[in-house]
Every structure is written in C-alpha cells, then in structure tokens.
Image 1 (cartoon, rainbow, N blue to C red):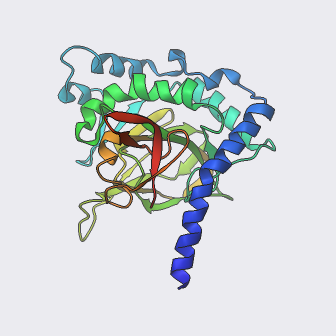
Image 2 (image 1 turned 120 degrees about the vertical axis):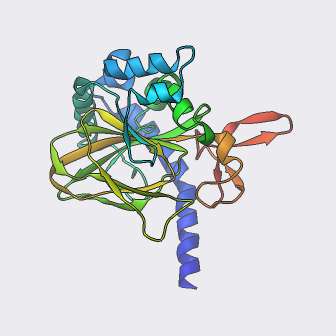
Length: 294
C-alpha cells in the first residue's frame, strides 16, 4: 500500500542520517573557519553566576528537591522549571557564530524532522568540548534531584541542536514530545515578539480535555522539562528567535522501554551517541550507543 511504502522510505531515510552527518562533520571540521572559536569549549565564565550557585547547592551535602526548588521558577504541576543558564554576552557571541556558519557554504543537516532551520551541534564538533561537560558537570546534579525516576542521575548521552524561527522560515512548532528523558531549552535571543512555548499533558497519561499552559521565553534562561511532556511553540510575530535544545537520554531507562515506540527496543548499531540506547554484551556494557530499529 501507499502508506507502507511511505513508512519504508522514511525508515531508509533515517538509516542514512548518521552516515550523512558523519560526512558533513568531516567537511565542516576541515573547511569551516569559526568566527568565535572560543565558544566551542565550555568555560565557567559562559555560565550565569546564579546557575553556578544552583549547581553548587545541588552538589553540596544534604541537597534535596525542596531546597533546589527555592532557586527555580516552577510552572503549574507539570514539573517544568525555568532557571538562568548562560550570560547574555555568551548568548550574543554564540548566535553570532551560528549566523556565520549559517551564511557559509558548509553542508547543513536539519535539527530534526520538524525544524527546517538551525544547526546540529555535533556536526560543529561541540559535543566533547562543550555539551558533554555541560551535561555531566552542570546539568546532571540538577536533573538528579528534579527527575530521579527518569534517570536524572545517569543521563549518559544527548542530542543537541539550535533551532531558528523567523517570519519567512519556520514560524512555529506543532505539538510533539521529545526523544529524550529530560529536555533543556535555552532562549539565546535575538529580538522577537510572541512565540511562547505551550505545554500539555505527559504523553503517557493524556486527558480527554488537555490543560495547556503558556510559558514565555526569557533571554539566556532555560526551561527544564520531561521529554515526554507534550509541547509546542506558538508563532513568532516579528524578529528572529534562536533556541538551544539539549535532549538528554538515560540508557538505563530507555534500554527497558523505547520512549518513541513504547516497546522493548530492538537495536541496530550506531555511531556516536545514536539515540542513547546501549546493549549489554555478556556481563559487560557495550561502549557503542544504539538506535531503536523502529
């Protein structure tokens, strides 16, 4: 049938994504000259002092959820939290670097199946020097207290990308949930109006009449939420909006149940972090990270 052929074509397309991404990264590494090379390696000075204070609290003896919540803005009962992440100076330099890359003739992949504009940060070579330490050193102490049942203490891989919304490109983003246990969404700027995020139900317990809440973007601040929280972005009315999205995965959680097909995953080997699954070989845990075949 037509539907079967469409599904088969999509499966084949997704199998090619990793190889194409590896090829793009090699070309970018060889040929692209960064405008702000300093932003590629995480430095404490990029991080808001209030964010560093939150991390200090989370790594102190006796840190608990109630104490952490004093530092965060909470939204309804959906376990969505806003917190300062970067300095505004870093955000400006980072967006300037991303625009420089966007205007270059380098090959570019789509961040995901829903966003047409933006940058896959692993293709820029930012995983090891920037994103892995951000996840391991700074975000994991926070997520361990906020989302323990989602593997918040053992988020061992990620997919990170920047999305861009503007009037003549992507305006909005329809309802979806993320291929992640925990998501960080940081507003990088630039100048824009409207474009709020909205959040509905958790994907495993939808209600007949979902209750949506709207959350505004605040420059240099991030939102932490469960990946399974259904959400979307309303249309911007003017300007340009850039956001850093980090999907964080816990193989201990997703090895039991794939969050996308809701079954025990059937794995195919992948390069890099894949989609964050791991496969045990005998008594050992494999070093490669895999994709669910579906």
